[in-house]
Image (tube, rainbow, N blue to C red):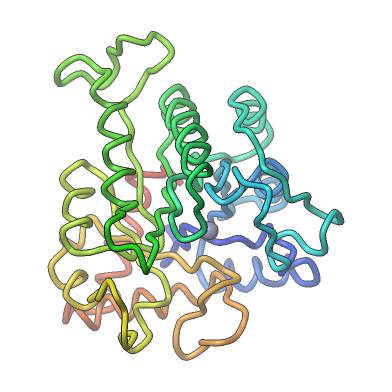
Length: 305
Ligand SMILES: [Zn+2]
């Protein structure tokens, strides 16, 4: 059993092209397993292929990020120069195409998927929802957990991506007979959804609603930063982490983005997940080793890594 598992990294991205293998080895040498996350078809395929390059400790999820349901978004860290290694496109989620990827390597989840109101415009939200529902169905068919990406619009406080995401998930589970895990009105749907919200940035109330629904909450490097001044949504990570039960908490780096202190400002990488775990332990006033062990146990429960 590893000491740490980074449940959400993108070492499959362009940002790691030069030293991908060294980054992964650094994680494995430091007793840290890695789950690489797909954000569209190309990056999902890359993540799956990478799982075959290591005998253990490297896993993948396959999915379509809500921002990639719209063609306007292109991140050079993710995809490189336009049109070179990965292609940016307004992708329509094709369940069967993604399903074939599960045969090519160690796929442990579906996503990242969900709703992103930060990058939204009115008609793209409809596309995001269609892609999200397709991925819930894929996860249900395959019996895999969901890796959720949920991001609020910081300005428009009337919208709430957490509330809307949960509503869609509940609708899916409602298609199952009362209390049954695997008796759905739709014969293709074999399992109720399970999953984790990565890079949690909602309220305590949002977190509790997901936990009550059976999901896990994962925290990223921002929890090591001083609280943002003038944050319209006033996210209080210390309070949220203090209040949530430890057996529902995970940690993720979202590499190459948002490196935790003391690496803030640098390219993030999976081995830094230990800084996030240490911060969770500090906030909870618990021993670091104990918190690390419980988080690994939580991850094994959900992802079967
Ligand atoms: Zn991500």
